[in-house]
Amino acid sequence: MPNPGYRLLVLDLDGTLLDARGQLPEAHRRAVQTVRRQGVEVLIATGRDWDAMLDVYRALGLSTPAITIAGAQIVDSDGRVLKEHRMHPDAVAAIESAAEAAGASLVAVQDSGLSLGTRRADDFGPWEIWNPWTRIVGEPLARHRGGKLPLFMAVYGKRSCEALLPLAPALPDTQWELWAPRDDEHVLYLWHRDANKGTALAEFCAARGYRPEEVVAMGDALLDLSMLSWAGTGVAMAAAPDEVKRVCALVTEPDDPHPVATALWRLGLTPTLEPDGRAVAGTAGPGHEGIRLGGPPGGGAKGLPEELPGGPQGGEA
Image (tube, rainbow, N blue to C red; front, side):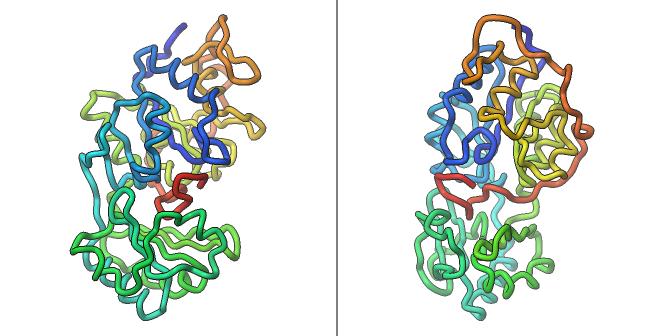
């Protein structure tokens, strides 16, 4: 089976490798294992923290480091932190002060498995799904952080977001994004400006000696834009925003139940697939022939959030 020269496969989890229920399809697990048997290294790059991604990591049998919390942490195979970007102290102080004044729902992600919140957001419908492990401690959060700066912060609910949104552009060393697909699902994400999947991927590849053209990256949302732009071959899921599709060499089909498996076949990394995603004997995929070109890979765009740690923990994002 030919390998078109790829040495690294980078996979987002929610909305990409995982299905709508946050589960790992068997077809995807088998396809990733096939790629690994060819000597291609596999790297997870997710908005989840280590605890929330561990089951998938183990199911794939990985031993590589992982990019977690939207690039705010890189951890090794035992979950030990190799590198991290914590928020600027002045930004954290301003956010906490504004949240206290507004009575806002604010969650601080301190470490993997440790999230602290001021209060539940009554106007945020899926609170229980998104925050099953968040410990509500009241205000101010600074009293409960033990002097440790957060890796990430999220403001929940339309009222709270409207109160804190004007503050966001002026916060030092902070990037932010408002996620508001529905009236009862508003989240304002805030995290360090240097934390993104693309930067973390570039650092990993420099240490491993991988060139961009030897890397395939797959994702579905704006948070993945930086890594999809850096990789020589970017693959966007069908539901990805147009900004993401434009920097990718391949866009998956909307009715494909196993888009990662199909994309790996189309790139020539796995054998022919049966309809249920099982590999069968025969020729490999078409390589780069017939790929939908959405724009030039390696375009250098910056990433914004999708399945962030303030999103569904251990479920879909």
